Image (cartoon, rainbow, N blue to C red; front, side):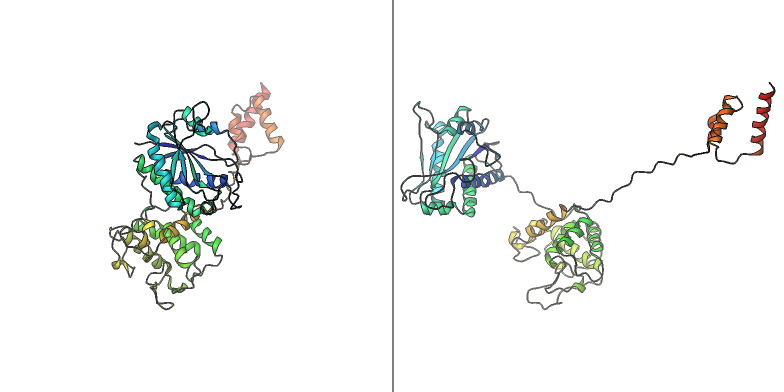
Amino acid sequence: MSNIKICLDAGHVGSNYNQSPVVKTYFESAMNWKLHLYLKAELEKRGFEVITTRADQNTDLTVYSRGTAAKGCNVFISLHSNACGTESVDYPVVYRAYDNQNNADELALSLAKMIGQLMGTTQAGRTATRKNDAGGEYYGVLRGARAVGVPFYMLIEHSFHTNTKATKWLSVDANLKKMAVAEADILAAYFKQEAKPESKTEIMGEPVATAAQMALYCRSKNASPQLTSCTLEELAQLFIEEGRVEGVRGDVAFAQSLKETGFFKYGGIVLPSQNNYAGIGALNGNAQGQAASFPTPRIGVRAQVQHLKAYAAASALKNECVDPRFSLVARGSAPYVEWLGAADNPNGKGWAVPGKGYGEGVLSLLDKIIAQETPQTPTEPPKEPDEPTFPAWQTDGLKALTEAGVINSPEYWEGKLGENITVGEVLGILGKTFAKLTE
């Protein structure tokens, strides 16, 4: 099947509904809310379309309307924990359609058994049904889901919050995340839903961040970076320039430098004067200063960019190779930032060894760089040209001569106010004035 749409319902409203009598810090509503968000994320990773009955934990809806919110969905799941008066009762139960519509018991039992095994409950997981006096579904959420034609609907009780062991298990967020993964896996297998391929960040390409963003973010973490031969702003620009030459994202390389140098605080094997911004040649067991050195900041940046290109691509370098360890890299073995740690790379290669989480650490810094807001220089509106001003006797004179018919092109003469005029122009005006007087 494809295009499976699931509606998740966090049972009960608010953050402090149904307090456990045996573990006072546990509230069923809080657990349900966390679990349904974890489950939503895991289901979406596996290609499901997921909606929830409520966008806010404190939105109070009737149980029936929460069920009808699943209209158009293939599956409705309401998440809960159970309660009873006996401490020893400890098993999950999944309530499914009373008439086993669409053979719902098969899926429900798979979920119930898995939950029991994962939680280590005393009694095994099971399924159940419950009808009201009219012969329909007892639980309002299930009744509502059935009313709008949802093929698979169920209410999952994650054991009993009247059992101490089960309640303590459900109180741990890490356990709820495991539960979300396991439940999502069961649903994905049942509906033959394939996971969406995870997008990865390529090392090769154009930078997203600007040099200004890179420098500003670094200064927010270290106001006095230990750079001996250039300013931080100049260094950031070098990363952009050298990255573009080789087709490597300069912002990725800069983020890596922040990770390697601790925002240019150094303090490890590499010294600031070595212009080595990524620990090239700094091996475990080396003494301070026993790493690659480069004559200028640009050459240091160039070496790092070339080393990244060695991992990311098999294409030839544009500049002469200055990376002393370029030839040691398996070309193209780590095209993604996520693969820069050997432990995270299916090829088993990487900049960092074992380097678990190394690439994610670089990406975390990169995201913060890209989110950095740079101050904008205010732009002044263009100044309107000043209107020329002339004494009133001049403009009045022009007006009088125009009305008298001496001047018949006032626009021409208005443009010449304030300018020198020729003797000929003066004689022309006087002559015409005299003629008018003698008419």
